[in-house]
Image 1 (spheres, protein in one colour):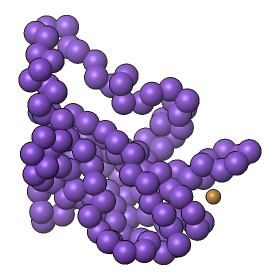
Image 2 (image 1 turned 180 degrees about the horizontal axis):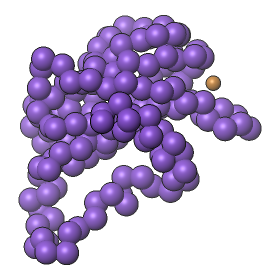
Image 3 (image 1 turned 120 degrees about the vertical axis):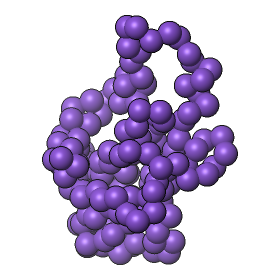
Length: 143
Ligand SMILES: [Cu+2]
């Protein structure tokens, strides 16, 4: 199921590329009371923790870590979704398909992809968890 998500997401994100994919996902369920202050505390970001140095073109394995926005501590969220694309001048963005796996460390995910071109790739990451929400873009410079 995770791999299917990873393959479908780049396409769906592409379709809303001109919109704002993150603000639209914060829908409130009809029955839930408005707990905006509580929700704001449970936000997380996704950070690239490995590799620390240059990222080469071709097949790569990245480690992403979900971190609480307030404490900075690693958060063992259920899942993340990530899409990867490179903006191209005058053309459709390039897309690299991703495989996302859990690791032995809760809150860290292994991401396998193939960067087929040198330059700037943008990884759009979204936290998928019942208690945490968040999303951000990770900019990767492929050398
Ligand atoms: Cu390119």
